[in-house]
Picture 1 (cartoon, rainbow, N blue to C red):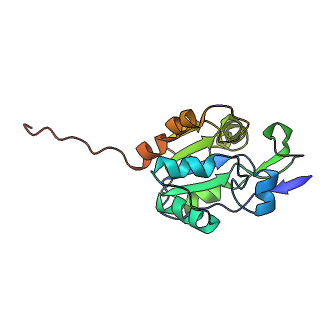
Picture 2 (cartoon, rainbow, N blue to C red):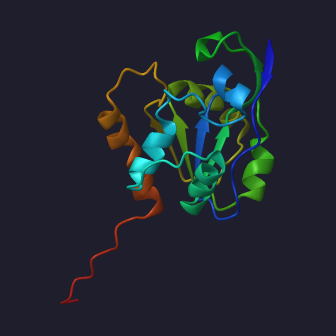
Picture 3 (tube, rainbow, N blue to C red):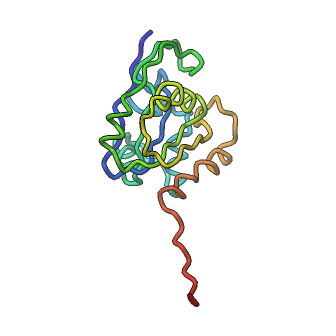
Length: 175
C-alpha cells in the first residue's frame, strides 16, 4: 500500500533537523509524528530539555520549534505493509532542496536511527542536497523495536542540547 508522510514541523529559527524514515501505521492514523505511544521520541525530546511531555500534539509541535528543532521524514512516500522500515519499497524522498533553501538556519541533521540515515544517504545526500549542513549525526532509534534502555537512548540524544546550546566559552581572566 502506498503511504505518504507529513509536512515538516519547521520555521526559520530552526537549527537542527531531526529525520525519521516514514510515520508508523498508528502515526498515520493519528496524523501525528511519533503518534505510537510506545515510541520514546516525545519522552526523549522533552527529557533532553528537562521537561515532561505535553499531552497535546499542538503543544508538542510548538515545543520543538521553541527549541529550534525541525522534524520531518526522509521519505515523502513509499509502499509499505505494517510499520517496519525493512518493509519499505519504492521510496520517494522529500524535497530537501526546497527545505534547505527555505530553512537556511538548519546546520545539523540528526537521524532517528540508521535506516533514516541510510535512506537519506542513498536518495538525497548523493545528489549534493544540503551542502551547507555542518554535520550529520545518527542517534539511537526511539522505536520500541530498539531494545536499548531508555536512559542509554537519552544519553545519546543529549547531543541536541550541545548542538543548540553550546556551553559558554570560559574566558581566561589573566588574558
